[in-house]
Length: 140
Image (cartoon, rainbow, N blue to C red):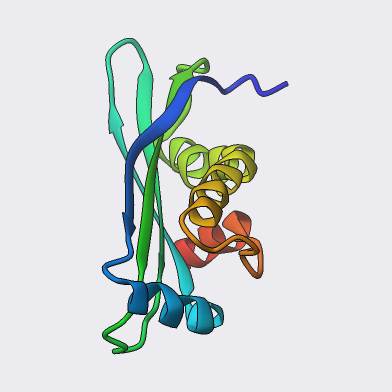
């Protein structure tokens, strides 16, 4: 049991699926292996020791291909900070690493469900995002 924070709620705050034409769908299906997933995490304090954390996943074709699709999900998680003695560094690790490890399986599942229902029925992401590694890289 985690005694530093508690997840109060989480929800899809923003969702974008852009497939501008049938050509874009066909081309995207053929080039889906070139698509890259990127993650961006932001947070803002709320009242009563709570923090809203937005985990944004973007799945896009990095090439200059003009017939392509674009997908993005903004997933909001509100956490209650249970340990009032936490330092800024501890909060950073919770937001950028610990919380992400906890919520990512559900977030990935929701995002893949949307993508599959948008015309990519067999889509799977490659490697899992290693939030521990990303956090350590950020520290260096």
